[in-house]
Image 1 (cartoon, helix red, strand yellow):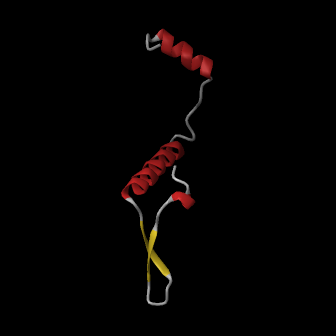
Image 2 (image 1 turned 120 degrees about the horizontal axis):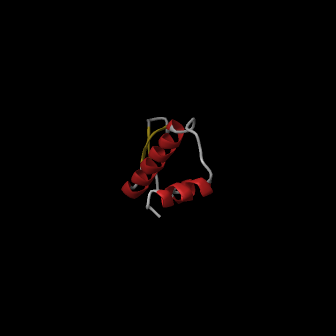
Length: 66
């Protein structure tokens, strides 16, 4: 995730100098979108049951995936 201080943002202001919009480099924009998608996926799955790492490895081996 890009750090705020490392993003080369430009601001669009109104006639009073109040920031209204931001212009981002495309790389930063796409990186932020990817982070947002990841956070949405985590939020959607927050109530799903979890299994231990050991159980995961066992299941993968059982299904010949590891």
